[in-house]
Length: 406
Ligand SMILES: *Cc1c(COP(=O)(O)O)cnc(C)c1O
Image (cartoon, rainbow, N blue to C red; front, side, top):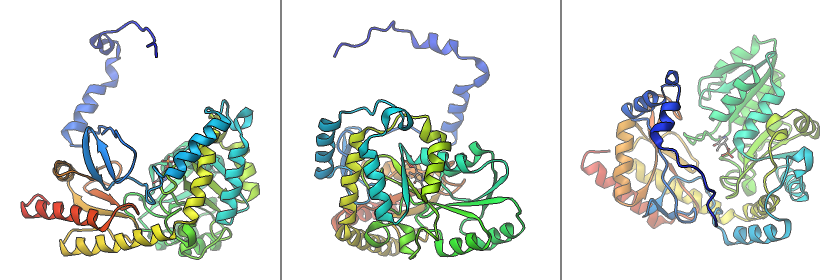
């Protein structure tokens, strides 16, 4: 491949062009000083529990690839086959010329599987949350959100101009007090499985509250679909709820589905509304049709993954038992997300670094992703982990405990 010829600009010259008022360097230095500086590790192999990162072979406990589908041979095959058939780029946004029959088919199958009238796919979960909330809410809406909701739900609220009120984590008494004195149009949005904590919202209670107070309930089930409920139908299914109880459900294709993208399930009317009003749907290029076709294959694998889900539950129970023996502080979670609570950001970083020296990849999660002083090692378990992998993790944790660093 011929590199595009570009005049090489010396770095220092670029820097002098930056207006001083922004003080990027100062803000970065402050991040470093507070142990909150972020940098990326580079994956050099497939996404799987045994992977190569920055040249090192590691055992990873931090992907959201809960069913091990990200490198599943049948998805690799579906992707190359459909790329051959449909080409690669989608060429346009959905409303112009990019909406392919693969997108249509994926939406129909997702709607049918999850028991909703209709479905709309988005290029990412972040865009789906932004696009749904911004389309539905305006300054006349009060939008109630759990304090620990994912950033994309919060950002959607900010973008929409809704009056945002965040209730303390899973505290529905407070929410009900607020709801009972609110005359606005009201929407409630919550993570179904909290992404950095692993515990679930009580969707039965929330859906009852929403009905009682004539509010529109939306759940973000990024970490529930594929993993929880009958055949992986998600957290609502786990609570025996359906489309009448949870009128808007968002799910992602980049986690348990091992692909990329997201979907929103709702009534046909709501989906028609989103096609007309959701700016993150309208003003962006459709994902490649081959990716949609691969997601259809992923849905088939998810449906058939009962054994993987059973193994995952076995690993979760094993992890919790061993963590208890080692007297680690866990968040009350029964899902594949099992954070080991550390508190101090620097301590969390240093433990993560020491684990990496022993070949274990377990990233530290710090503010602002989680509240101040609640830094943690967010362990995620995947069906492709074995019992021996868990043993290896705890052997390393035990070593750190013995030397007093954990
Ligand atoms: C990952 C995640 C998203 C964003 O989904 P992407 O497809 O990665 O953009 C939204 N909500 C929650 C709770 C998530 O964990």
